[in-house]
Length: 199
Image (cartoon, rainbow, N blue to C red; front, side, top):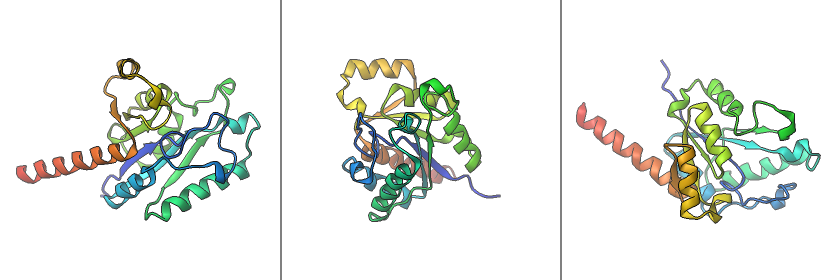
C-alpha cells in the first residue's frame, strides 16, 4: 500500500508572486513574493508535493492567451527550480464569473480535481490563499484553510482579518508563505515526536 502523499494547494497571485490588478500578461511581469519560492523549496525538501490552483479570468476576458499563461508558468517553474524547488502541477480556471463554472474559486472544483488526481483525503490538505474567496474554496472542498498576508490580505486591518476568520472558522493566519512553511514543518515535527513517544 502506497503512503498518502503530503500535499499542499497554493493560490498563485499574492501568495507566490506579487498581485497585479491588471493581470500578469508576460513572464517579466511575474515577480516572486520575497521568500515565497524558498518556502516552497523547504516544503519540497521535507517531502511535500506542492500544487497551484489559481483563478485566471484574464483568459476568459481576452486579456491574456494560453501561450502567455504557459510562458508565465514556465518562468515561475524555472525560478523555483533555480532555488532547488519544484511544483507538481498548476491548475487554473480560465473562466469569468459570468461563465458560472464549478472550477472558479470560491467553488471547490479545482481542489476536488487535485484531490482526485492525487488520491488524497482533502481534509489532510492545507489550502493557501490571500482572499475570502480562497478560504471559502478551501472550506467547500474540505481542505484546511490558510490565509497569508503577503498579497491582497496585507492591507487588511486586524478587525478585517478577524471578520474573514469568522466567516471561515478554523482558518490559520500567517504573514507569508515562509511563515506558513515553518508552521507546517514544526507541526509535522511535533506529530512525529509524539508518535515516536507512543510507539
